[in-house]
Image (cartoon, each protein chain N blue to C red):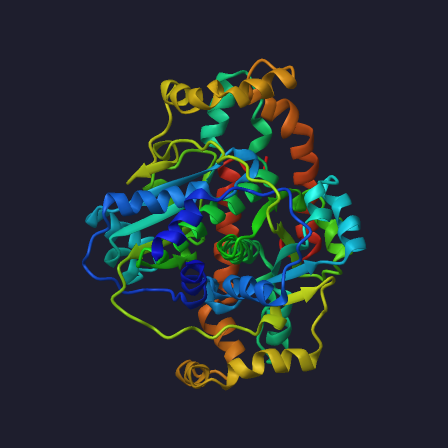
Length: 252
Length: 252
């Protein structure tokens, strides 16, 4: 029986195209329950999940995700947030000083916990025959998304997922070999030869060669640095994200 | 068949006591494969996994986790790290400018990706009959742990898990009700009454009352703020973590 779980985890693919089929409340609740059942720091649950299902609101939200079609097409979009607001309010009502939970340590603890819950939801969704897609773009426009979702101080969007029934069946994406990302006992830093070996295979894939050609670059690494994840974007969005985290009270 | 997966996710418990049984390489590889198969930003895999299995090194590592017995008792301990070092070296060898991947945005992207991989490994482990425990303490002594694991610049520990065969079967931990953490369309901020209702149930549990008594506090919230997660610790460890992230080049 367990093999099905492992099979689901090992053969999963990100799904970006969905059928019109809606997600039943019962199915959605099972997914959410799987999320909150996952581990979290001190059982404090310093995260919140905001669901977007309204058609018009999905269209509006999509603007903050570079108009990626998954946001409007998926029946359910979830924005998972670091949240010390709820816990802090409880502490205030109990004369317990929760001021320090709005600091950088807790931002990181909450980021990890929000992501743990998210990934547990993704595995549940995939186990139920649904497909998911993570949208890292949530960090780029965190402030705008926070306004759109009415997030108060102490709440910051960490990640977004779209969920729906698959209307595509892509092939498994290439990953680096296990020994390229796993280290035994100590981190074994990479020699020039290691790097050639690790990334050489990836570079030789027909798809990789196509990316290089389409983007008119010299090699695959430059497709990342010059086209997909450009320096000016990293600096702009990174600066904005840090500024917003400060505004939300997490760098005090 | 799928029900087994959902059952695993919904009934999982954190396991802190392990039998002497070792984890076969095949089982460990399946867990690791499940981790790297999970979603990640741009398929850049900006994370690394460092495995500690050596008995003496587990004892040494445990010191940086407040001596928690899981670290020495578990057959496998994994420290999962944000890692832009490997990707950056590849870019450098390809005359691609990866300098901006060492900024605050990428620290957060890598934190989320490292955690996604970790949680996928946890689900795989639990599906295979193993138990896991997350150790948030990794952020408290990130610098010391990084030295211990020989992490170079560009690599920061994000989370640690212990994995082993369960030698205990605890009951399910209480969680807040779904509607306490899930918001529909917009974040519905909590009124005083909401907070009373959400945390009231938790406070009434016999275990909660025992915590309050044992710690000689007025209420459960104060157990968190005065005993478990104290202000001075948050400020000290939060400051240290930020300082270390800067040293590793992520706030440039």
